[in-house]
Image (tube, rainbow over all chains, first blue to last red; front, top):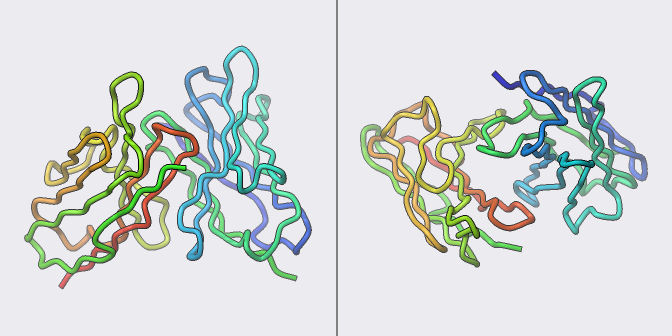
Length: 118
Length: 112
């Protein structure tokens, strides 16, 4: 059974960096033919895909245009996890953030509510 | 980006009665491999979305056979043959044929 366990702060100040981690059990962040994603959900924007990483013979990433200049998703193979960093946050980045695995898209993290506020 | 339009926005159903939700795509979701990467989810309050249907018509493991998905190209439908009380929540369609991944706006299902 594959599980994704999210961790990270629930409150971030405007202009600072949002950082979340998604720990994987039952699968490997380095497995080929798998992509590891971050998705967020807010009343204003609905469900919004932010980006993904995946390993072929090297690490690859794709990001949504809306956050492309502010986002970084990185693997940590030693801990079998991946992380999200979103820079220069504003209140519009307030949302529930989810990590998820592609394929059947059946595996999601539990969600982390992140509020951007001073 | 692919826009997924779900209708209706909300649905009030008597337990045991059927329900149907439509998801229309702004582009064909047929991938080069011939599959349509259209998914259906149910999101209950405070939980992540839970997968019901993948690749337009394949029922995910453990999902009751009262749920069925159909469609191809740009028009897709989720049908519930008999709605049960625990199936209230918001239903979403999602496409992964084209990057970026996109979601429909959701259909809220409540029980009468």
